[in-house]
Amino acid sequence: MKRFRSNSLAQILALIAAVLIAVPLNTFAQGPATQIKPLPLEYFVSEHRIKVSADVADEAGIKLVRCYFRAAGQADYVFVQMDPAKGNTYEGILPKPDTDTQTLEYIFLAVNQKDQVVKTEIFKVEKGEGKEVPEWQKVTSEGEIRVSTELAKAPETLPGFKDSITLDAVESAGRFGTAVGIYLLIDTGSGGSAAPAAEEKIQRFQEANKASVGKESASGLSTKAIVAIAAGVVAGGGAIVALADNGGDEDSDDLAIELSDSPPFYCGGSIRFSASGGKEPYKFLANNEVFAEGGNTAVFETETLFNATGKCPDKVEIRVTDGNGDNASKFVEIQPNVNITLPQ
Image (tube, rainbow, N blue to C red; front, side, top):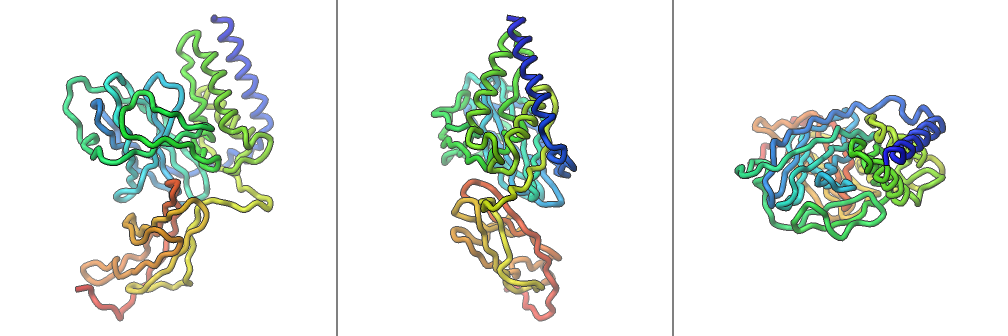
């Protein structure tokens, strides 16, 4: 068994070396400035949902934030979308762990507006036997939780959890966890089982990305580059990657938000926006407050920004969220207007 494990790991390392040689160096050039600061969980109580939070910031703007998670001992990660809360904080809800689950593992991932991807280390939280329900688990149990996978097919159930869950498989353009190796993470300290686990992970990875083998993937990163990055994670390294532009003549389905009016924009006036790409329906937010839903166009009334003295902030962040949970945003400068009336 030890010999089999050694040979298999040696083959994986050889594959890593061969692929890394083939990957253009500019694939890894100039990493993003995204900062992710998770708010730690001390423990969890069974049969209660868990709110996970992280402060995420990047001068380029944040496109999306996810929390990948699994019950310890399970093969694959799944993820929930995290939504903007106050300031730079993003929040997501994990389903209820069942009574047999003792440990949860989770990872935060963020994509900025330049399509650069950053993930954190793996965090672990243990079951708090006999403890009171903590603040981060005092969340509503109403409604279903949408959980996604980057594998080709979504599982029918989610081992280790017992909740009202909708499971789906994300489209290839949204497989950011694959790009940074989350689906190839292996416990190499598990004795003789590490080599079979590695082989199974590679098979799952290839299945999830079979549509893009030998060409540029939908996310703009070549399959060889993805394998190289993921293999580096298997070998114990971290992963930060800037996804390349698609190039060529193919249309991009990435979510985008554009101004329908031309600046300057004045305090007390209106600004029109339009969304494209991604998946309908769209939701428009100004400084994390929803102001329009449904269609692909929206009008933002800047008078909602008035403070007590009748002034608007210098700029506002307009964000659009689509049916996939992806985000795109744009900062708009607001000019003062002396001819305004304070809202009653």
